[in-house]
Image 1 (cartoon, rainbow, N blue to C red):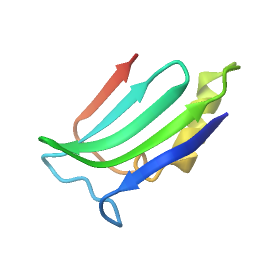
Image 2: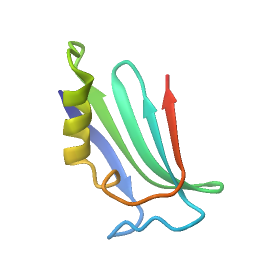
Image 3: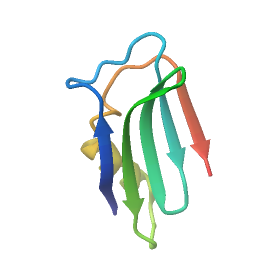
Image 4: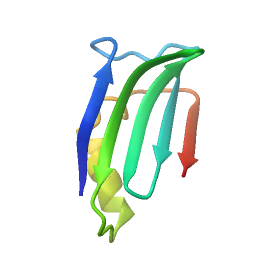
Length: 82
């Protein structure tokens, strides 16, 4: 199970401009989604994960369903597995 425990949104509705990119960091007990511009954090979401992860596809489905960032069109995407 994934729970959104922290979030920050700089604008509503969120629009990703040409010089901004989506960044997704995946850790053993968390996933962070963020929109960044050069030298600036614009929005982020922090999802805590349960310790008993059996199926990553279920985790990603929950995060996608609860995210206000991942449903946006973006050009550049950075994915980091930590």
